[in-house]
Amino acid sequence: MKILVCENYDKLSEKAAQLIMSQITLKSNSVLGLATGSTPIGMYKKLVEMYENKMIDFSDVITFNLDEYQNLPIDNDQSYHYFMDENLFNYINVKRENIHIPNGMAKDIKKECIEYDESIRKIGGIDIQVLGIGNNAHIGFNEPTVNFEKKTYVVELQESTRIANARFFNSLDDVPKNAITMGIGSIFKSKKIMLLAAGENKAKAIYDTVYGKVTPEVPASILQLHDDVIVILDKEAARLLNPVDYSVV
Image (cartoon, helix red, strand yellow):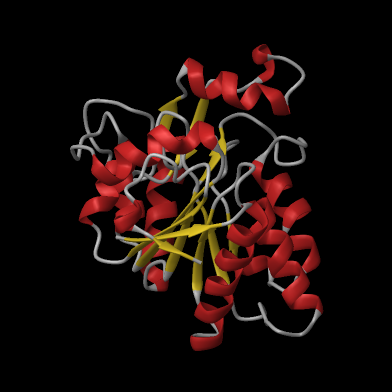
């Protein structure tokens, strides 16, 4: 696990975008695993700027998103389909047929989960998976639990996660109680993983991820066992880490 600490959120976003650009430069048809939430927004803004400056071409890129709320229409302004369009897809030349996001409105939700994993397998796997991290160390919507889920599945969101996301909705009652998410096993198959975290409220989750016991009660701790993980933090998120364990960039 390689850990980079940036001066602030803007520098974090720039570094993350540079790594995505490098991946696409090396492989034009890269398969990107993408995340939602507030943390990656800065990275997406930087990627749009790179595209506008003709530094990056998304025409052959394939994307798979981590998750989507269940029973929330894709045109709802809180759906992750909508989020990705508004923050990235509407402003770059990615092909619509190359965009994959779980269908939370699927009538057969179990079939949707199986087919999502199969689509990733058929394409050859994810080259680089972007992750955020929750205050409880969840990645994707994999909440603290008693076992690591191997495949894409439907998860019941913990109250703490729904409360954290309620700021995006009119009220807590409007926050969906379930979501489709790539399981830990699905995420772990990615060739490279990039975890982003910003803010003092993420410091404990990052500490537990880096130093803690590998346990499903701290979902992100599984990343200790992956062969190629880069963690990019701002100073606040890194405040509990030993300086000998990271590089300042």
